[in-house]
Image 1: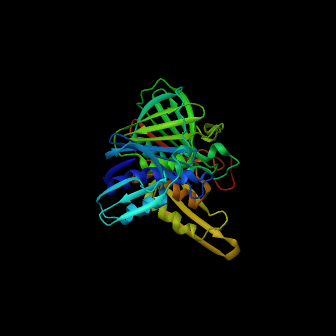
Image 2 (image 1 turned 90 degrees about the horizontal axis):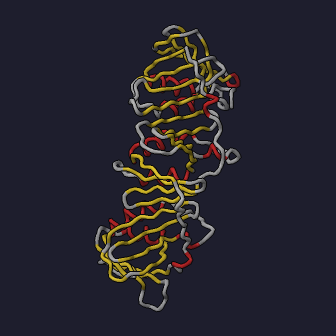
Length: 373
């Protein structure tokens, strides 16, 4: 194998693939990039076995073939070089796994691995497929992934639940203290099914998805493939049953609070400083067009109270929330005002932006302190 390419262009492609490489892999060869050259098309593979990234870039091909090259060494070399044409190919020292990189500064020799040892994840033909906008998928993952659970004993909740239901796609994430549900309408599919996306896959997609175009999503019970532009990501899905999240979403919520999002967020941050450090509990006392936030830490005799302008309709009530979780949820509200809907003090509260697109709807839920599901 031998080819010439712009060092900066190659670096861009490698950075897309590098996110999948584990720092201490079980298989040493998975520390490598697998290069496969046919004509002027260089295919780059990287894998941690659970996830595989395949991306393509155009080069000046001189001799077809394949090599497995150290990802760390190659990335560090390219980052240290200014943009220039470089040549990469098999070294002429008799070692079939030796690689030589030639730049205007000199030559760099390193030994790779046998490309035949690189694990190739096969793609199953029996998959359902639909197309979705890259920008919408990026938005959904950015707005929901923070809410997934870290509890490996509740495997399903460590990923984002993605439900395809004919003309809509729903993304759900929860850790039993907070929940995000993001719904997109106007989707044209014949599919009614669901999958759970792992945290690693979400990280790869967030880094690689472009801000335009569409992504083709194919899946079955075990695997999924995300293909966009010159990049393909193959992943093993989380095989578990997602909990019935609808059971914790109150249907009737006659009590409604509307407040400036930034003011509410800043107030929660300030009052939260005086809250008990184990619960971070801030109490919201709500009455007609009046909101009082308070917190206390009895162990250290700390307490604080603030009043905030708002619009409130419904019965006067008090609810306690973890201030850090509340602030985190408000970070994902893009409107100037936020709406909070409640049924009773013991049930979850719903947090919404004040305005939403007709085909795009985000709903967040926060459980009161000392409650759970």
